[in-house]
Amino acid sequence: MDKPYFGTYHHSTFEESERMREMAKEMFREAFKRIHDEADLQIIDVGCGLGFLTILTASYFPRATITAVDLFTQSSLRENSRDLLENNLRIAQVHDRVKIVEADVTESLPPGKFDLAVSNLVLHNLGRKRFVAYRNIHDALKPGSYFINADGFIKKSLFVDPFREDMKRISDIFHVDFVIKPETQGLFFKYMLVALKSK
Image (cartoon, rainbow, N blue to C red; front, side, top):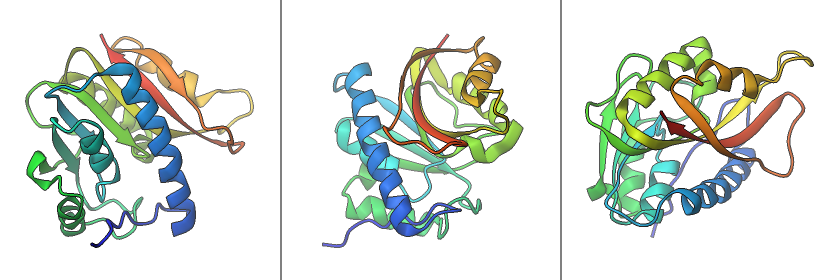
């Protein structure tokens, strides 16, 4: 049986991208353990790309229905395409539980209220528009639901903590419940998972 192919992140090699995905797997599984038991959840994957996180989430929550959202035009993931995503979902045998929506997260998200939102290495690519995306994600969630976001927080100054600055900007809509960090980190690009609870 074929294996899903998840592509290469920009500024990275395929091997480095695979290592990032291994870190992400551990962090997301740990986060899922902390927040939910198995349930018929409605989940949204924001910036799903080729389906790495969609498939991981669908495997962890076997009764969940997932809405996978992407524009499929961003260059932050090489080879990004809806066709490759659909093929990966079929290989992983989760295609019947995933609805694909082509949408810009800085403009709108599918209507309805979700029990959980997930995202991996997406929002930092949006620049300042990421704060619009945070608000759109918040509005798509049921009150008190989680947004589990693993992302890179880019340090542009030794005196400013980009993670804390971002969290301050969204403190009116989300509360930071917990953070999971890999053991090794770069100096200027901090990759971490943050569990945000909607207010």
